[in-house]
Image (cartoon, rainbow over all chains, first blue to last red; front, side, top):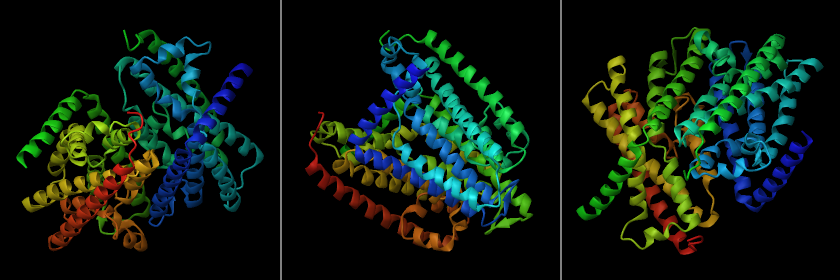
Length: 262
Length: 269
């Protein structure tokens, strides 16, 4: 474990050096995130000019939910987002050959090689904002809720990763799956709405097979509402299954991999 | 003129054939529409149900869903992500040299690629638009003028959208990497062009600001024609403004390209 941490630290230093060489890109990444945040804020601002509540989420809860969603997204961007979609290129060009020969688990290398360092700026902006929003709201989370919220957010990031990795791993079967980013973006949009809008069959799907509602809504529920604990246990169970499936699919995919030149 | 058109038609055909080889893209494109409208349906049905209202700003629930359905489709049709990426790479890596020595216009060449790349979506989304009036006969294309008006507005809006992308890509001559600008524009378009909320739902000040930009003509204008939300007496002015925006953005794009090409160093070639 410490070995992997030191490897990740080396990845981080390397990525930071690279990113700071291309300052326009670094600033551009921050600008894109800012536009993304503003637009979702504007969308829900418009929605709340017509409605007081979305199910159990009132206006304050939805804006807190949004900041939690952005934070989870920012953490995912920081650790994995620059890597997962590159799997398609690795397979198509045969670069995965070189990764497989390295003395490190190939899935870990593929998932964490490039750290999206500009996401640090987003995280440093979002976490204090979350604190301010919660402090100024009528919600009063206790210490246990805050601790569980932090754990649940980490589990949310892992679901985000597992789902993206699962989709990206399909390249082993399709040979070229360059649209994985678009497909993933379309599915992940479901995680950007509070779970209270999902009812009936959509709720069942988004809480099980495509667990988008577990990414941000559950951490929000744990932080703000008192019904969060059973959601947390459920979230851990689903995340464990999803990560297990992702690992299995990755290993099966590697067996199918024939290298681009073969 | 005919010779020129034949060149670009050949490029378009080749790209079209290549695009049709990747039929899985059609599945993802279809999923984007279905998932997009599903999310909108789930959020708006709750708003209508909990507020016990029958309409918002002149939209009944069904009218709103049809508007958003068409908006999402039109929004996808005008997206030029792939062509923009290729143009940026050309400028950054020196690939532009290939076109500078050929008797072709870089603008029109890439426009042919843009249409070719999107050809698969034109088929799929065309079918989705075609079936909609049969499912909701009273809400879409009330007469032949609306079909014609929608198609004309759609074609012009696709051209306007491409011109905007070309204009933005031109800044790669100075900054090298403008992918962030394109991404930010794409993200902004999803909401500001009316793909998640109709423009008439926006605060008045926001609508006023947007009226000075080409954004309302990218999605809202063709969709408002198709859904009869825009009175026919207002069409001529709408088409005139759309045409003016096309001319302005086209000229701006050409100016940026011509100044930029002087700075072009053909690095990496």
